[in-house]
Length: 378
Image (cartoon, rainbow, N blue to C red; front, side, top):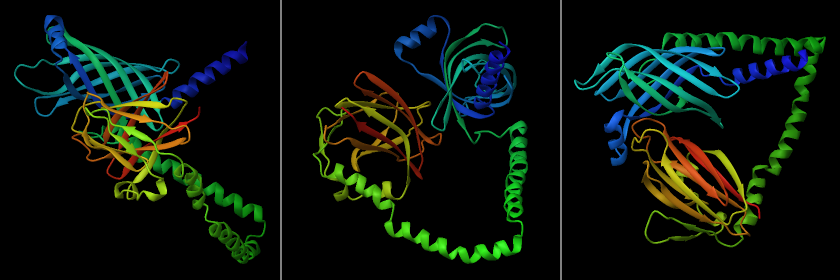
């Protein structure tokens, strides 16, 4: 029984280490005012969004930090906060404690929020999403409720708090020396006689150089081209852009015959997700992920431009890809045409393939494109 409990505690502590909230989180919260006014705004479709940044210093299951709520110069507020993390359920409770800096317009009220969030991680991206409630600091009346979306980022729109800046300075000093010294010592001690061993290894390096040259002549990268060629000789793929009235059928010739667009050749292309499906038709909807800040994207499928300079909003940009049984591999590349008002360029791609649905959060920059691969397996 003791061993079972020990394993449970070890599992919980491991989850807690993996779920480290320390750092900077930025996104937005969407506000719905309380009372009849809030219901009326909902019916009218009015979107009240504010930018939101949280800087967190976590210690085991507890954390402290600061929050920033802002919308250009109209509203700016900084508050201290504290919270707890449940590693088993990934639930996060964040409570604002006290407003320490504030700048607002005459008709605005200072409100403190309590956030009920859930942590998630997809590839290298970390997210906090959920709901909040708020009350007025002057009379404790209800300020309303809403939704929250946060992404972990590396920079602040304001300044990095001392509790984070000090940790960043300490990390490289502690980590680099012990990592290198034991490796060098182990190699020297196993040789026994270091000097003759070094003298012997130096001529031997010429032999490994000849062995290294052998795989170079084989040119391993050529294998990638060989893998792609069978798909190139097979029938065409129909790509339909559904955000226009007329359906546009794009016939895709063999990939080897298509010149690679400069924006794909000159930027790094990072694989974000691979989706394997038996569906012959894939429906894709692309949205702005978080604050609508004039992010603009273009989309290529198998090197063919299918969406050009589309502005991301809360309204979906639809795209349909029809898969051929004889063509089992397709590459969709999302290119950032700009970084919007809040870098980087972020989007949410909702993919419906048969009975399954996928949500892919994408980050692209002016140096890096995002790649989604579709594999057809009937």
